[in-house]
Image (tube, rainbow, N blue to C red):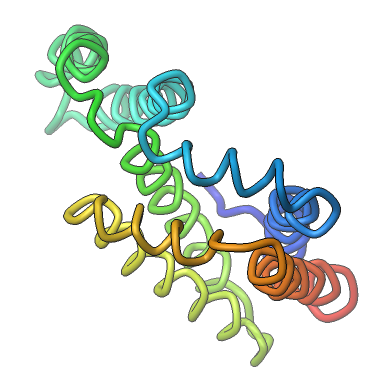
Length: 184
């Protein structure tokens, strides 16, 4: 499968970052309330982990189907991924939203690195660096979600801090959109 063009990926990821951070600038009180509750949200965790599981299922199924060496794993993938998702739904509810967000970040970082690998533009390293920062953050979110919950609590301590940090996030999104539209 060919990677997405870096311009498209940078623009889409930048737009998503802007959409996720702009509410923190416009309505910081509501954003803070949501952000503080998010790490323990079972509903958002299940939604995100379902998306991740669907992506992983498709990737693993295609890999098992297209490779003679892994064809034996196709029935295991067909049954195993839904069983794993069920078990996560049933028993893995602690900090599920944070852990599912970490999985989304890892999948996105993979797309980002794949897209930058085929690009010749020097500024591609901006996206590569961001991808590796996301990998480290995702590992941290998975291994020590209570630390990340505390970090969110610190970041959302008051409206001014929320606005400042969301402004930085929005600026990052704008930079990615501009890079995608004008440079890549």
